[in-house]
Length: 446
Image 1: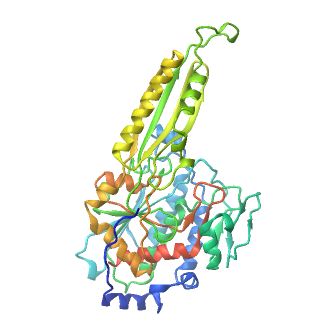
Image 2: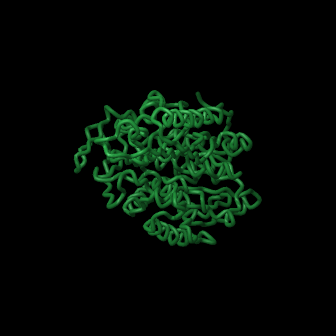
Image 3: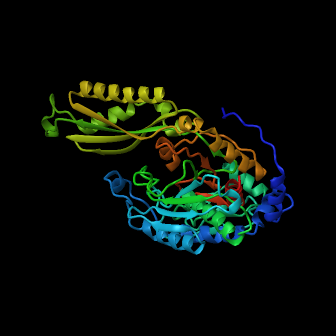
């Protein structure tokens, strides 16, 4: 199931744009042409530099209200701030909470057009280490198994997108297998910076005003907690935080975190019968009775799920943390009710106590984007000017754009060319990254 497509036709101005980009066949650029674009080497250089900066965020500290959750996130923020200044952006700054902001004024032809904001996040997930990333470049990838130094093997036969990269003799970037790569979302950061650099090098290219925000702590779910709305003038925005080329994401999960605390009645195990209540057993029973066909590993597409994320337990107290995900509000209400009922039932079965606390994390951005269809229409036009048909896929997760849309700033998501996020088998396609940068350039000129 996909969103409806809006008809599009090219105009005369696009012919001039093709000349500016110095390619005679922009509408059907193949992998070699994308890898040969003037800004692709700079894009690769930026990406390799950025992934080597350790920016792993800390979900525990973020949940306690610390933004940025890890001071190491400031290292990349500082680098980006200085690079934005060198590119000529105005009002460049990094806030106390580690949001890096910059403003690129419009050229004369776009002086009366409203600005928009481009966003990407600088942190990487804390589930897999992002320290000391050592990227490996695989040029003209031919489909052979990628044997990484730390015992990790990437196989094209097990990854349809990697198989496609092999067919196209793409340039692929991986880590050495001891860490994740960090394409989520340093590919997006590099692509935005590359587009800005393009306009800096080509002052003759007309474009609208652009605001940029590089945010911390997206991976902890707190990326927009301290976003500097006082600096942001744009009424709409775009995150660059997606995956495979062509993906254009306008809907995502509704997301809640559920914390269930079980209280038992500990007693010496030798004389436990008949009145001991073991909180460990209660929590295990609760998790076991969640619908097993509604877990992340058993669902896809538009199917929601219950995701057990953490369990801390001893005989007296056990705390289980679940992520609840559903694309509809009605479905989410049912999921929360099921958690409440199962927790209550568990308490009754064992004779202990159970308390449930639900916290909303983000909402589906679909409703907000439907109120401002031009935001997506402009992005569709930018895709088609790059010779690619948008593919509307639901985000089985969320982005900073989810939160921004909820705040009244509609914000769809653009692909980055990264794959297998949050893992040691993460990889990125350089041609897809170049395509994403091209789309950003297009977008700024619509």
